[in-house]
Image (cartoon, rainbow, N blue to C red):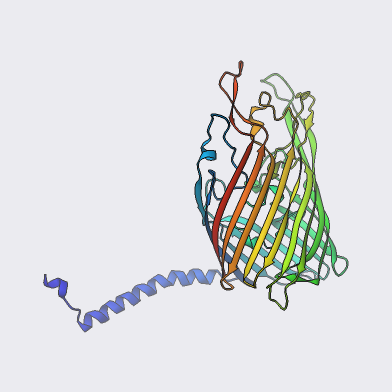
Length: 446
């Protein structure tokens, strides 16, 4: 067993050190070569954050909850209603690149790219593009081209404190679309925006083909805005008011020939529109960069028609609808959210949100005998969210959040114990659902 007690000679120690250094140099060469390729021709800065959170709910859900699961009904117990659950999320961290380029047409050019690691359906953890746009800024005008947030209604004062990724989602939190938007300031604090954007299935983006992408026209959005720092600010949030909206078209394409061996297509254009106001008021602004004692409120309110991508459905047929003569109805939606922010100290803060979203459908659309699959659409959703956050230092933030969610669905959940020809429907789920959840989280900004 002498080999277990063998001591290295000085020569052997020097040789081992040499081998370790040589291996380290060999491993560093490709890393250095890759690092060199990451430079930019222009002024490039990198930023982002790492985010992790975990929590518990008194119903069966996952980390992306926006609605409450249905409650059980009678003697039919539903798994997600009777058992609680725990969840965690680590893919919400983000990376972004900001590029400042050379001047063009007497304006300043820049670009912004941002992604997270939420992936798309079924590939959580993969890098997912959120924003990718270029911008030209002049004294009173700017043009922004690429994938970006919708302007009408989308609003995120202190959104970085909200732990739940899908929080406020059904209440016009907003979507990202491929767009071209012009902003103009015509007075010190007043301006407007006007743009066109492609509205389609957001998960597939440029690869989507649906009733909205087959419309002959892009969506048009616009609005007026007022922003001022004359009343002070809280962090980067100053006083602002905005009223905006959009108009778009959905094209329904159907085969009007009853012969299955022949196809003659016809189409019908259906309107989609929405109007929203959004605001933020720093009631007690920060003082000399310190947010202690600051108090602010904000929110939005919206109304629209045919907003299927906001938790509802698109247009649907009326009872007198035929292939040769389309007769369609449009769901109407309204709602909004209210927010309160209070800072006990510059680092310790309290935030509360109440959100409301409602969709109106026809009675026939929700009749299980006529449209058995429509029973699961959301009719109304309410979220009550309370959050306490603490900034440990400029890089790290900790938070704890409680949410209570109430959801009304289109109808009771029905199942058919009979056949299509002789249906025998029975109820296996309530019209309503409630849920309580608590989650803790941490961010690290860089």
